[in-house]
Length: 233
Image 1 (spheres, rainbow, N blue to C red):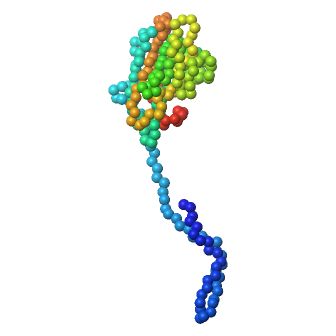
Image 2 (image 1 turned 180 degrees about the horizontal axis):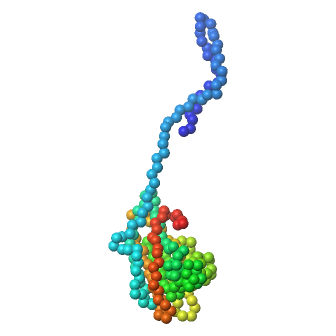
Image 3 (image 1 turned 135 degrees about the vertical axis):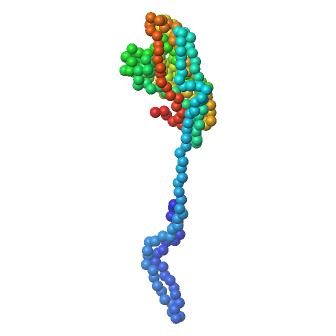
């Protein structure tokens, strides 16, 4: 509260009439100020943000009985609710463990030295609001560390995990290395109450032969809602 300065009291002279005489009295300077104040308060409540999954869909996506060259697509329906702002939706993977590395790691990945599916796998994810977010026909990282380091032989994925290459291996030249990012921005700036659908496509490319091994894996992921425009840790 800013002090309201009304009048500075300095030395002044008071004239009093007493028995016909003019009497002068002085009051010494005090340096005091008049002031006034009013009480106030600060009130605040935190907002909320939630991501609900349609009970008629599941986040346990089971790509069963895959045949090489025939991809399957599974969908997840969601709704975002937030107070005081819009929402971004992400797909994230824990890249520290063997399941992720066996799915999409490069050779000599710390968690799975044999590497992931590489050119034998296909993965794509799209959102009904954000369109196709990421696509890869070669699920390997160029340096085997499961991180994008800007190598020229990788497939143009941005800082939000969006991009990729749909080129698949049919023999001869390998497609660009294009490991699945640990975080992929699916949709941006969604108002509270928005419903959407995430479509995940997965398959084994036609060059995969029985003698090269079969893929059986479970890869954990999360759908994550954040405040719009805020980076995902």
